Length: 120
Image (tube, rainbow, N blue to C red):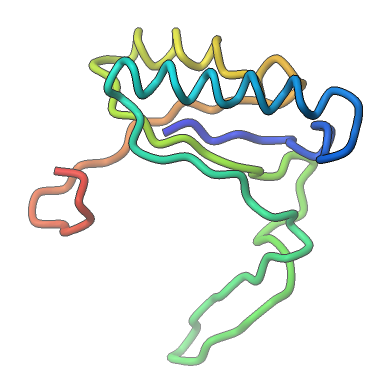
């Protein structure tokens, strides 16, 4: 999984550079599809739209915003089924968001036998 942080500085629709970024992001997704590794990927709404849920002693506590105050915010993800870490890192370098100031964290998905999340 590619976790993409610090997406706040990316161009927005209507901004100069947005069309170029959109073209590059779509080309990246097409390359991942061509390789047969693309599973899904989406940008996330800003952290101001987040709600954090914690359950303590059987009671849900809801808080507006992200879990922790941080300078980096999760802005989107790609779920890819790469053959190995080398392919994942190669694709992370190609990821347009990484070239627009975002950080791409590459993290393997944990596969747990019997867990029914459709990743087996």
